[in-house]
Image (cartoon, rainbow, N blue to C red):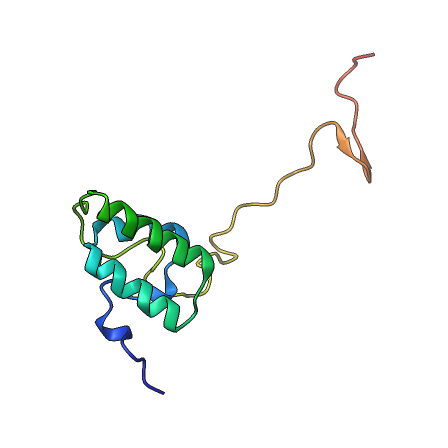
Length: 116
């Protein structure tokens, strides 16, 4: 099945952006690009929170707002560099902790010295 326009979208990996990332990313787009995303969204997932963000931004641009500077294709934290297993291993994990000096429910605390 073809991606029907996904490759021509103004935001790379648009379908995988979290809504918070989308809100900040659309600020750098012109009205025509936001319209293109809105049309794509209506044709595909038609997610209400996403269409509300895009519609709101389009209204702001039509009311005179200017796109902000920034590269919509720049690497973003939400993209990551690929998913991989945890880097924590037994060799790099923290040492087990001792129970607190006051004890735990299954291990009563021990008195210290000759305090009464």
